Image 1 (cartoon, one colour):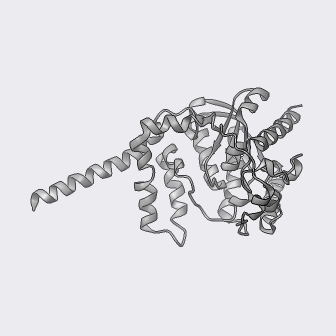
Image 2: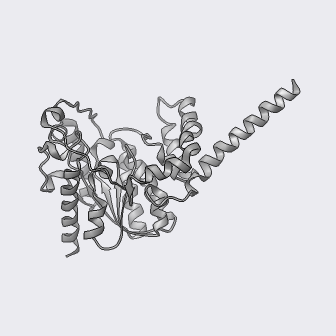
Length: 303
């Protein structure tokens, strides 16, 4: 019985040690392809595009490289809310990375909910203090549970950790300076119109505060901040909840004196199905057109 207890205790200590090593030190593994640590490793980024998957799929980083001065990088995580973005930006700048301009995702779809984590790569890329800050907000939710805590700290990224020597090079091949190298074909209008729009109303106070925090952080470090909306397909863009949230977000930025560009400010035909793979994400053709318009706007600002 004594041996069994000792064996179980040793096993628990080993498991606890592995979990702590993962949570405290995974961010230190070399990574120059994507994520927070890749930005930190650059030391200086001229244009940092910060947002969710629509940015990753909608911005051609090689076009940015050819047309804009300095070095651009695209930092995205699936479902990246303003609160998460504020944590990412804070960590990058506190690490001493110099960023000249942040082009943040004007994303109405991400502002109506409490703290959440859609992309567990975030937990692999960040320091423990950042992980804990996000968890503290998630734990305030009514649906927070022990399993959620266990999944967040213990289960997350275990497969990636075990297969890292093989999986990282394979994943990294799909990225260049954080941007996706995929060149997807567009869908047909018929298929896009059949897709369901799932937009909930409201502007959550946590996300509103996070946007103000992003503004303060950029002011503190002398970083220029711009918000840009990735054009949604017309069916989603016309959704009442999406439009109301877009209006509320624009009003907040305007009142704060922050430069922003909504999809309607760009010369982008969001009725053209060939530009989209779904209601949110762009095809290769749409990505190149959207990127060219961002480049044009940024060049105009420099004149």
